[in-house]
Image (cartoon, rainbow, N blue to C red; front, side, top):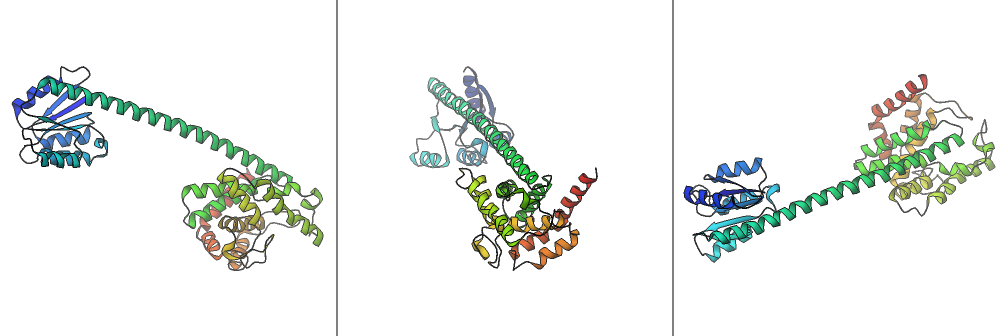
Length: 347
């Protein structure tokens, strides 16, 4: 354990350093100049500080305050050495964070006993902090492992739904990425962006309950068939409702509300405006845009710029205007997503 002694009296400094060097597991270092000592402390971590009160240029309380202002010295034991039995001085020292006091002339046995006790305390403190940091790393690794497993399940399930719908699964990837970009432009923090990115792929999970003849019908659906297709929203909500994780909760919101419209003409509940959860409003934009750009059994793909213009024209009616503005603000990145997909297909 490393100890620093700060005292402008050379004889006193040498005597204290000599005594401390007799302690097992103690490496003392002495400084006559408090400013030099502080500079050293800013670079190195000491485990115990002994500082004399009466010194020129900086007194012991000023050194104490400067050390406590450093994060690495917030809990290090600091002993103030004084030849005065001044209660007000001790009160001020305690208020500034002094751990203990020593009085000159020294009782060497007392000095060594107090130093040993404080170093033992510091050793336990360091070991406890190391143990806590190790446990925190282990917990973080375990949480990351669970999160990765959760993500893997979500992506595999989402791709299974896409294959059920007659596509390769690229649609859910693009909807997830575009949704995250919109959330980013809306100012959402990183964790919320991540949640939307991971929940968005499950927006059409309810399609597993729709008949193949309807899902893959070439051409327009009849009114009855369209009503059946609409039930994928409630099916998806029932599949995801009651989840214990925040991710599944958000996925349920998206599955239930991504076909609601800003003007209240959507389904299944006819929600309007901000009554529609923001997650559903975001995914609605991403989903419709990518659907327009994608070939389906019942339609050819639209040119990208035409699809973009369609989204911009529907702000305030079909879509939340703020989400459309965020979509437009992220257009260069969204266009990159589409180009990357085209390059993948070409390869």
